[in-house]
Length: 200
Image (cartoon, rainbow, N blue to C red; front, side, top):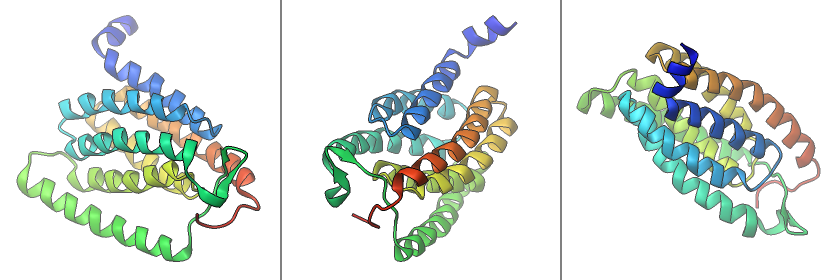
C-alpha cells in the first residue's frame, strides 16, 4: 500500500524530499538552498496545477525566479552585510514592515477576488493569502532577512490546513515539518544576526 502510494505520487514524494533539503540548507545559511529550491518549485508547479490551486502555481513560478535571484544575491550582493565573502543575516526596518503588511493585505484580497471571479479555483482567499505572504517571505529569504521566518511560520500553518482539505497528504506533511523547521531557522538566524546593521 505504501509503495503503491509512492509510485502513484512520485512527484509529491520528490517535492517532499527536495523541499525539506532546501529548508535545511536555508537554516544552515548554505547557498545550495537555491538550486535545490529550483527543483522543488518546478515539481510543485505541476502538483498544485493538477489540484487547481492556481495561486500556488503562480507562487512556484515566482519561486523559480527568486531562487535564481537569491543564489546570485547570497554569492555577490549585500553590501555592508558581506563579511569575508559571507552574507550576514540582516533585519528590515519598521517602514518596510508597514509597506510589506499593506502589500500582504491588499494583494491577498485582490488575488482572491480575481481567482473567485474568473477561475474555478478552490479556496481562493486562503490560497491567495499564503501566495502573497510567500512572495514576500521568499523575497526576504533571498535578501537574507531574519523576518522571513515569521512569515514562513504563518504560511506553513495555513498551508497544512489547505493541503489536508485538498487531500495532498505528502505536502501537508511537508508543511508541518516546515512549521517546526521555521522555528529552528528563526532561532539560528537570530543568533547569527546579532550585531548586523539593519537593511543593506
